[in-house]
Length: 269
Length: 325
Image (cartoon, rainbow over all chains, first blue to last red; front, side, top):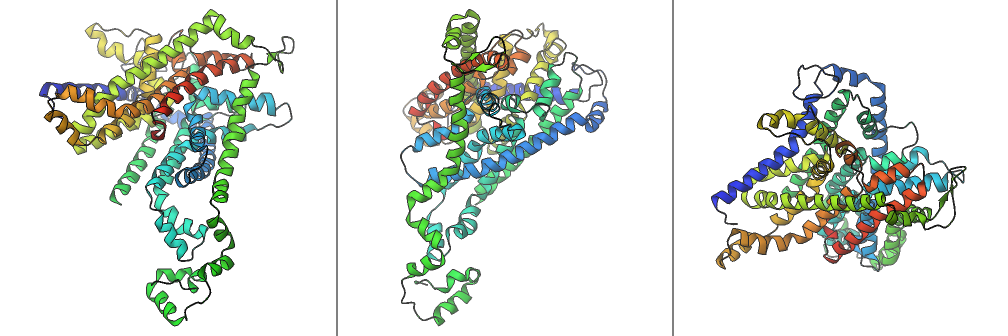
């Protein structure tokens, strides 16, 4: 074990506590402010109320934004799941010229700043496709989201495929199963949990993406982050934005919970 | 069972029932036909693909490469092309042309140049701060905390990762604003929130991207075998010697992998600066404010973060850190 003096250990513990306080205080302030009866968020909270929650629950723009976020993230997730898995198979099973380039290509959309990815797509849509009469609209938003989500599925599936024993599939094919049958009955069950985890992360990533959405969302379409952004930009920002933010914080528990469970299943395997 | 039964091909359900299969295999006379021949009849596509690695590889890569190259890389190239175009001053439309003015302005307009350098400095500062906190945190979590505490902390640093980008910016606003949390909590001690400026923007960016550094660093430290610490102690190194000479060299690839995120994400940011940075401008602010008025200038400016990130990735690739991302 790493030997450390008592004071050094205490120092480290203090730092850990500082990081935790630094990470969680702001989130706590947002959650608490969603119950703040004041119109403008402030601290300390003078009076508690559920009014903003009730207002948010029935407010049409929030519902529409939530629906849009859900649609975009779901479809982008499906595209990313298919494309990411295909690349993961190619890179984990074969050695070929340009392998590292393909790897870089998958990582690039997430490695480059979102503003660049967003501007690149927006430029293609409005300065190249629009003039020749192609209006990508909503689909353009989904395509751009799917592009940076591929890496999430790829990473998860690739890591698992690397650890998988290929002899199981060889055995399956020796026993007469075809490629599809082997994939469905032998290969897929072995990487299913990482596939689901990757798809889920892709969904969460798309759900939260602001930059690419700002530049590629068609006029009049708001996702949840876009709605929050517009609300934040207003000078007399109402506390209702804290309600939506609190919901987003609570929703973030889902991917964390599921990925933890999947990781535990893996350990038990 | 040493040989394959021809029936297995059409009757996969029997695979679930070993005794049934065994009976069939015994009852059946040994096939004189080569097994592969039979497979070719029943599964022409599978057999074809099985024998042709190249075809399989191409069919795996066709769709993703069409997407990534055909849509994404083409878009990036078109962005580069647009950077050389001009805006017609009368119709304010983007027109094909060839001018280097957009690029020249990056280096000659003082406000543009200082914004680029400021953004680079901020991204490096965020990366440095993240490393500074992630390494001790990782050491504590991976090697000093009890197993239960370790899992708890791992969840605790993962959770904010998904808490929402804008939510976190909103949260920082509520903490540092005039009637915010800091002034309430630390005001009695004489500490006052400095208001929104470049430093608070850096703090906000660190808050946003810290988990991207903390997680890979934690994972890397966890993978260091404890025997290395014993060996280091046996050779007379004290705890800090061990950390600097054993732990840190081993986690450099993880730090670089994490820094790709902290650096690149900070470099492209402008909303954190807009809401918590006061008048602080970043490269993203210039891109965003030009995208509708003057797309070629926005396109030229997009090349700045691309250039920084590509340079960074080149360095990262040399160290083999990209596989960890």
